[in-house]
Each structure stands twice: as C-alpha cells, then as structure tokens.
Image (cartoon, rainbow, N blue to C red):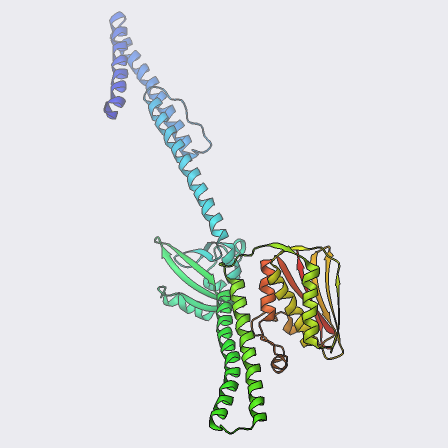
Length: 424
C-alpha cells in the first residue's frame, strides 16, 4: 500500500471517531455538550501529538543517549522507522570505524611514510615511517603546517610550485628521501616519503664492485699482455729473462684465477638457486685441514696452534671450510714472521664459536665496520703483497648468514686481532 495512505487513513479515522463521539453526545444530551466533547477529544489528541513532537525533538538533540519513545498511532511507525535508521547508522559508523582502524594499522606497517594533509598543508595524520623520515611527532605536530615542520628549501619550493607530477629527491636527517604529494578529494592531500638510503648504498656498492673487479682483473692482464708483447718483439730473449717473465705471468694468472673463483663463490652464496644443504660437519677433521693450510701458507714463519673443545655442528662442510680457512689465511698474511696464531673451536654460552687470534699488525677501529665489504682494503699495497683478492671477508660474512652465524672482530693496532664466528 502507498505509504502516504498508511499515514493518512488512521488520522482520518481518528478525526471521524472524534466527530462520531461529539455526535453521540449531542444526540443523547445537547449540541453544546456534543461540541464540548469534540473539542475536549481534539485537545487530548493535540496534546498527544505535541508530547510526541517534544519527545522527537529531545531525541534529535541527542540521538546517541536518549531513548526513542514507543509512540502511539501513526507515531509508532515513525519511531520504528527512526529506530531502524539509527541502527543502520550505528552499523555504518561501526564499519567505518573498523575500516579506519584497519587502514591506520596497515599504514603504520608500511615502510614508506604517509602523511595526510588538508588543502593548505596542515597535518591531519601520519604513520610512524613519516615521523621517522620527516622528524614529525603526530601528537605534537597535528594541526600544524607541514612546511613549518619540514624546513628544507627544496621541499618548500616543491610545495610552493605545486608541480607534483614528479617526485622530489632530498637529503634530510641523514637519509636520502623520495617525496611526492598526491592530491585527493577536494580538500585533502597525501604526502608520501620513500627512504632510498639503502637502495643508494646498494647501488654505490654495485658500482664500486664493478669498478674494483675491473681494476683487479685489469692489473694482472696488463702484466701478462706486456710480457707477451716483449716476448713477441724479442724472439732472441735469453732463457733466464724468459723464465722470469713466465714466472711472473703465471703468478698473475693464478691471481686472476683466485679472484674469479672468489667472485663465483660469492655469487653462489647469494643465489637462491643454491640453498643450504645441511650435513653433519666433523669439526675436528675440518679444523685439522684449516690448520694444515695455514701452516703451508706460513711456511714455518709463524707459530700456529689449535684447540677443539666444541661438538660437531650441522651445516655445509665446504662452505664452513672456506670461511674458516679465509680467517686463518688472513691471520697468516697480516702477522709478521715470528708471530703467533691460535685457532679454536669451543662451546660458549652464546653458542658454538670459531675464533682466530693473532699477534699481527692489528686494525684501526674506523676500518672494522667496513671489513666485510667487497674489495675493501685497509692497506691496498700490503693486500697486493699478500696476494689477497679483497673478497675473503665478504665470503665469510655470507657463509655465516647462511648458517645463522655472526662475525665479530676485536683488534688494536700493533696488538693483533681476534676474528670470531659464533653460531646459535
């Protein structure tokens, strides 16, 4: 039925009932009493409507706390519909609150910074990443203009010019940030920040790696090519000179071979195509081999001792041998003749530990944090004298990462060094 009829039919019936009541009173009494009865009934009816109008007004002033009246007559349907609307609105508000909570939780987990601003750049909300990137504090800075909070000239120019099609790259708070403003709705803007510091560092390491690898390969190739040119230009070269040149070319060829082998080892360790295949590693046998290699490299110039007090472990015997041998050979290379080197394997409260302690030249503290970088050398001339490739500690680092281990370095210039690999 038409909703209008549902409202008007009961109202007309009530008016007809009032008229009938007045007619009955007039019939049995007098017309004056009949009119009085009609007016009284209409007054009661009017007061009832005014009461419900007042109750409706009270509810509209505070719909959250005031209870809807039950109603009477047509008001029953009106209050029922208002109650349904209120319940639906409460459900919508609850869903909106839930979605807003989920949105903010998701934004808090993002590695990129997100800040929401109004059309005049007053801060409304930001996630923790934006706080870190831009130096903001939501509780303190909410409602403040972002250009007053981020006082970087390039950022202010970017905001003033309003050329938001391209992101802005700035250096801020020791980080390299990529910043972009994205307008949305009519009176809102989103400020997005991406920390590119680590990406830039990795890119710089890649460039350095290519440059260093090219340099390391070019040097022996230059020596070999030079000697070959001399040999070609002088077919009558005496035997002693020829043998000397061949010996030097052989040394440089071996140097290139070691470098390429180390580069391939690093590539394999970093590749997901070569997962770790754990096996039982007999540490006594492994360390005996490492000590034998160290003594062969030392050729009797150092006092090398070893102790094995820990149990066997699970891992890749080949990778662990490579890492342990690198640490031992470094100790031999950087310890003057007559020095002492001790290699140990033991069980400690922190975990199983392999350590190499030497009485060598030591390392300044400023270099220690960078020792595992590829081709990083404390003393480039000495590294070449000792025939190191510059990749040994990088290999050690990646082997330990694959075995849930960590490398620690303790050293003092002139006092020697201790390189420890701890496995948890």
